Length: 306
Image (tube, rainbow, N blue to C red; front, side):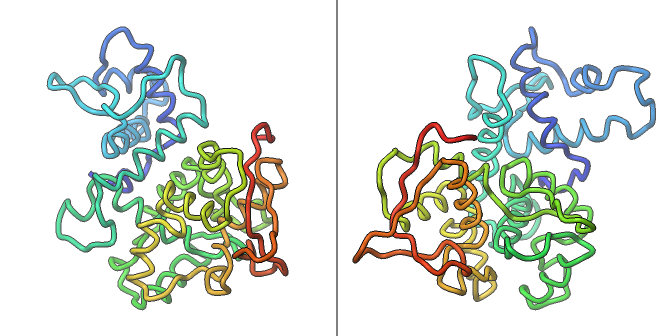
């Protein structure tokens, strides 16, 4: 089962489900979970439990949940057991670790027939990678405004089955996941619905693992790409570039940092999470194509605002 096949998936509900399992006295079945989260008589429509069931299905696909031989559910073997219920940032990092499982999904851009093409998070990662390669400084991304046109141009075909996001139903599901993973934010522009590829929380998650010492800017960007492979420098992004023949991001084309990562780093700089320096005779890069100066080094700072 592919992650984007259950269109009513609610990634945010996943944390409540996982925390419920952590506190449960016995392993529940799917029906037990549905009954707990949608009691009998609450919205009795035939599809009322669809979001819950779709969410459970998607969490199974990425191994956050697994099924016992007796049909009950348990946490996946690679999900850490916390001392207290997961808070939102902790669960976001759990989702990231399970979605970006290269060992499980392999090359997400390799075309294969049948379940091998859509199992695990392959379909979701193709969508995420393509979205994060778009201009963070451009218009918000939405199915009706620009997603179809951009995909037709970049993939060089109007055959939607060749696109990263094949229809509006898949886009609705993907747009929920991309926000839940800390890779994008809903548009705040008046009369402009959609999402903006702005991975501030995801990049901040990476900075948590970086020591508070001066390091070259290119090393920092490499660490970000390695940790979040749908971003520039990551293996999934490299696969997309190989498929398209060029990187779609205007920042990369201007010999700058990827526009989404550069914008995220500037926001984190304003929040006191990181400081940039320009040292003489050192290699550097502009964080934005609108910057005049290059940055050569970065110092991650602990204690900045979250």
